[in-house]
Length: 175
Ligand SMILES: [Zn+2]
Image 1 (cartoon, rainbow, N blue to C red):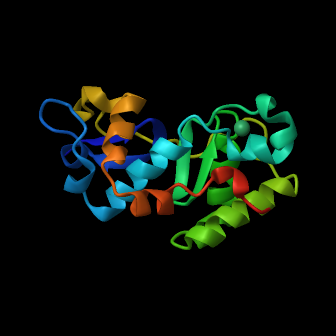
Image 2 (tube, rainbow, N blue to C red):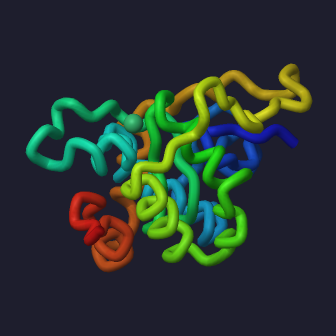
């Protein structure tokens, strides 16, 4: 079964769980709760500034921030990163103790932000373990990106309460 990313790299979904045979995104109530949470959060964080850029520039210079391209962590405690800052995150995770926070969503997010805000960075040229496609041929075509509209349509089917719970504004992070 193929794995796909939607909107941002990082989180991976079982292709058969999220897409119909026609390549349409399934209705949000046909997928598992975890998948649903991730899809909803993707619709919120896609197009948001990179967490690391934001730590540098803040809201005052928000236009200096790159748009995030990759998402790590857990729903509501995502670390979203631009391509420039992904190596810093990978370094933190693999070489600077970040992996010990795996499974502790909130601490995970905070620990990376603290580490980065303290001025820590990956060494020049560090690439770390990139997401390796073990079997590129099996990755199906809808892979790249689902139209944001499709995702938003699916999200719109959730009831308001569920949706609000998942739309906590990323900009409110207290660092
Ligand atoms: Zn960045």
